[in-house]
Every structure is written in C-alpha cells, then in structure tokens.
Image 1 (tube, helix red, strand yellow):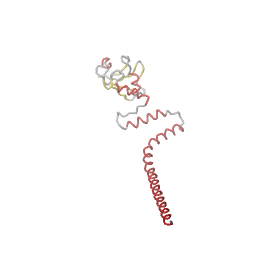
Image 2 (cartoon, one colour):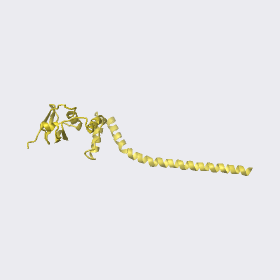
Image 3 (cartoon, helix red, strand yellow):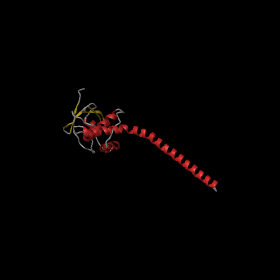
Image 4 (spheres, one colour):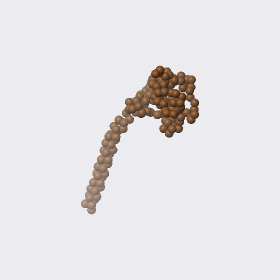
Amino acid sequence: MEDINKYQKSKVLKETLQFLQFFLVLSLGIVIGIYIYKPITAKENTQSSKFDEILSIIHQNYIDTVGLKEIEKNALDHLLSYLDPHSVYIPKEELSNSNEDLLGKFYGIGIEFMIQKDTLKVVSIIKNGPSEQAGLQSGDKIIKIDDSLFSGKPITNLDVLKKLKGGKNTKVKVSILRKAR
C-alpha cells in the first residue's frame, strides 16, 4: 500500500511540475510577446503622439490665441506637399464637394485653373464651355468675381470652387487681367 501512495504522490508531483513548466513557458511567451509588440506599436505612434503633444503644449502655454485647426490643416498640407502634386488632405466638411466633382453633379465656368500666390490663373479652357463662349483665354488672371476683388489676398481651391461652381445656368461675372500678346 505504501508503494501505491508513493507512486500516486510521485505522479501528482510530476503532473504539478509539468503544469508549472507549462505555466512558466506560457508566461515567458506572453512577456516576450509584450516586449516585442510594444516597441513596434510605440514606433508607429511616435510621430502622431509628438504632433499631438506639440499641439497640446501650444494650446496650453502659447500666450496668444491660436487656431489649432488651422495649424493642423497647414501642417497636413505641408506634409503632403512632399509627396506629389495630387496628394491632398480633404477635411470632412469639404468631402461632399470633392465627391460632387468626381460624380459630375456640378457646373462651373469651364476652366482649368491654378492659384499662383494670390491670383487665380486660367490654365486652359474647356471646349464648348461658358468660358470659351465668353472669350476667356489660357493665361488670363481672374481678379474679380461678381464685382468682389478676388486677387491680392490668400485664396484656396475651396474659395474658387465656392465662387465659380453652382447649379446649371448659374450666372457669374468675372473680371480678368490679360497680358498683351
């Protein structure tokens, strides 16, 4: 009987040791996994957290009132300018306008344009569009829209689209500056 008790105690001890070994290996695996995973996620979040931290410091400590949304937008625009000319950040508020452009649910004056410093410059005229019918030419600079000065101050693509796009048959008056040829 004593041999059976020794055998059972030995078996229980062996099973307990196996369980402890399994638990130790499992725990070690979890700890190693955490240390491997942590640097990867920390590295991925470093830039975002630096940006958030800087914005927070500016918001809390800068002496003047600061438009954080504008700083954020300018920072994103600057960052994306290093990619290619077609990479842009579209804020949520402007997304519906961009989608309209892609779906063709708007009308404009029929030009392709670019903004040079503070001036809207006509790059090309869309064939058979209102601008071609009105006599606009490539190279013209649009200086007034509906009798309001539209040159000499900072403008964005959104500003241009708000002024020059609308429903079908919407009328808009533009004043141009044309170089003598």
